[in-house]
Image (tube, rainbow, N blue to C red):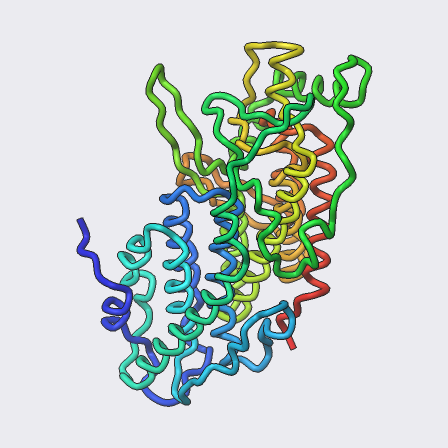
Length: 437
């Protein structure tokens, strides 16, 4: 077992290549930030955070890194004045001699560490993450660490006012007894996940319901109804899936808590969240194009904002419509033994979370890195799935959306309308938040 150190002790052992004076952002590639992102994802997976909560962790950690780097780059601007109640990071007292790269990674790790349960998973590997820092000037090193800590403290103070703590104290969710409303599904019949997430303070949205989608098809079990047509589509599609469709569904499953059942034995398989998958895509894309520190941090922070606001908007609709899942309807009216390819998530069906957040993230990444951006996505290789190639971010988000039909856990209207919802969120974010001056 590796010996554990505190974050500060490990960073103290590591020094960066600057020897004195102001340390401009012209150092090594931002691979250290990429490593920090992967390590945060590892902690999120280990702690089994729900997709909405995971998006919150990514948001604040990436904001901390971005805001630190902004201080050393006049081509980019702070989020202060663009986001309501955002702290004035630039107003923090800072010394003249600072390595902003070191400060940014430190701010990222300290912020992320305070938002996960297993903070030690971040501190255990700091020596690897920050291996390329070789600071021989103790003054620059100390100033950088101090600044990173100050930024982290400021962002954590801001995060504490987003209503997250209040949603932890809410009463247990009460299920509707009306026909067509969502109820927990097999095999675990898990309680509703984050039913009050719409009360979380958004970043760019004016309110959780700003981009409220059209209502789902009315619940109607008449065989000629629009609703039952969608039910039959799910049943028919899942009954004749090709190998490629099965692979697509599995690749985008992103179920952080897959419940395995063997007789009376239940155990979970941990995987990264949908947001974690898109954070990974943002990192891979930025790295493939050789983006510098500030460009990479901007890609991460805008993607995390799109995910965060996307989950708030989507969850607002989920618990407004409280729509029934395909599994429940098919078991009741068509085939009581039918099970979807993917495990049905423990929250209402409409709209599709993957469709909303994937589209929002794709809109942002397309604006940053361009359309027709061909990339290989290796996010799922640790889980035994092959690398997939996409011809654009939109191509990837479209595949993520339709994967929910192949998986048997969403109706088509939830997918299509979720994509519209995500598109509006992404475009709105880009119109409200500007990173470059």
